[in-house]
Length: 458
Length: 131
Image 1: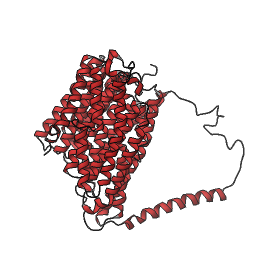
Image 2 (image 1 turned 90 degrees about the vertical axis):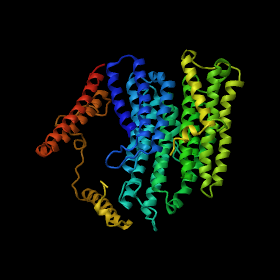
Image 3 (image 1 turned 60 degrees about the vertical axis):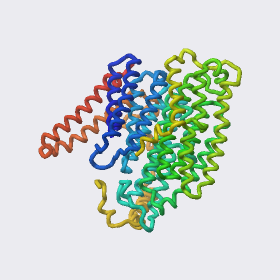
Image 4 (image 1 turned 120 degrees about the horizontal axis):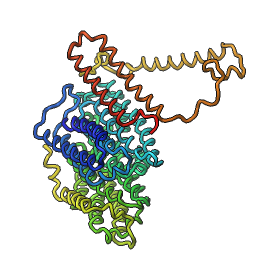
């Protein structure tokens, strides 16, 4: 709750401070300080819960607050690592930061909604600033294309989401996800159709196959700074909303019997499409876009599981995946050449940057002792808990092995190929190096001791 | 629940939606029927004058589909914002006495928000015709 109010108000505050403050460093400083404050304000609510708004449409429990803390923490790391690169987007620096704050307001609603109306609002509050951010480089044609594509596709998928909500309301007479009582005997076909529409709408928003077609083009076309945020915190928020909705409203046994196989097939398709297409990419940015699809496939596995393990898994996955991808993108933004060739010889020229990047890539692959391993372990075991999903788990493991190919190819280019890395040396400041190493250490710390995140769960 | 509908409380089956389907069919049949009927029944006088765009009686010059300055769109969008403000003022004017001071302060807050937005627009230079 605190997080929602704070980010919305602070976003407006940033808009106005942009009118009076000319200094770009000052604006960036305000944005970073605000994110730190938001983290504290959100953490305060963890220890002093219970100030829900009247109307009962939002309820922030400990899981919501923990996820908000992960989202705010990752955004703080993102601001610290890539905040300077916001200046490349255009002249309205304060507005870009403000839009990220507004997205986080939507993330806060997505993690704590109890009404389908609030789910819809959250998804829209998250999406609309992204349309603007994706098109923020006005003279860049690819950026414009990404924005338009994302907007048209997003508006279309919102239609599905709304239709699903309308059908569920028509059948149950309530928007409240806790009061739908779908567990009784005899299922209204309207409910099943509604759930199917909701699956389509939400799968689209998180970029799962077969509704993933917008993802590579949008992630590739949008400015790298923006993609870094779109592919991480926002995607994780989509999954939290997805899991929250399905584990509260549709978890009765006679209902899960209808949708578990659909979700399992979506997970399988997403894993296959994401991994096998990523293998053939020549651009690292596009590879990371497809890798985000394949990671989404793993997160969908938590939806198949639906239990305490699923919540553990999705929260760990949100932290592990976001940190590693934000780190990998922070390095990518500093490259002049986005192909694999551009990374050649980085290990010799910038040993620390290459080392941190290696840790991020290992974590994305899921190598033990990194956060990615623990996250994959938890989502896979949650899927295993549900009977009859062994085939899916085996498929996921095979796909993780395939993903090693394209992640290790980058590590190989950095260390074992001779060449001059196309990195911008004046952008690698000691502070940046330090932060990058700190982020890498965080990734390892969560991997060695996942209790760092999970012990906060009730 | 705030949005709980009394109509749906009586129990809903797919057949409850039949009136909507019926209305859809009626709408299609009516619109289609009227269009066909006017086409068949109406008198037809074809000529070059008939096909010309009518604006105000003066012969039109050139094509209307030309690129326009983006400032027009910006002004139009901003106009819509302030137009919506007026929509909130009408109900307030009608209920002025019932809402009392509490309503007054809420209206002041609303106007203050709007004023802040207006201030933002002016400072940002959105209304400067040339930059």
